[in-house]
Length: 240
Image (cartoon, rainbow, N blue to C red; front, side):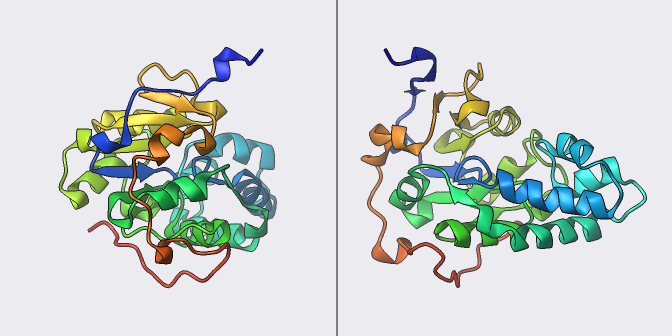
């Protein structure tokens, strides 16, 4: 008998929203091995316990992590270094099951990405996973306060000029869910770390469990369906 605690339960319909926003790491791509490889390398070079750095990195932007574990270093410079190490380890990245198909089923003008990753790392992740670059992406350097603060999603909503309830969010962590909800958006949890959040609008293990949503989106054009690792020439709009 199937474990009922892992059954997808979603209380929203895609057609009720004007826009869909996705978190990136853990939601669209499995970047855990990439992040761990880069962060442990950086920590060893700075003579910081790699295990401590990993524990402190949870739900933090790299600039915030550096400030927390290495206050004598420049957060911006070291975050850029970590991002470079992530790019070098990008071969370890994998897309979340059915994420490419579901993401591509949303018309380009109706989707965006809100990530705690640096922009250069996020673009490399998208390319490695075969995901089209969104027209709008809110990255770590676009905000002064990261998730769970609502600022990342508030920034997106200002750029879109829509009310929060017209934007549906997919997030894989309680931190991300709290950020989306604090901004006034409905949020669906994705993956084991998001299961059971009391304020979410539902949960799916991965995007293979979202057929009820997939069929409601207009099909993406052929230009939106890039093969894995094809070069991305677009540059997403940034926050101003």
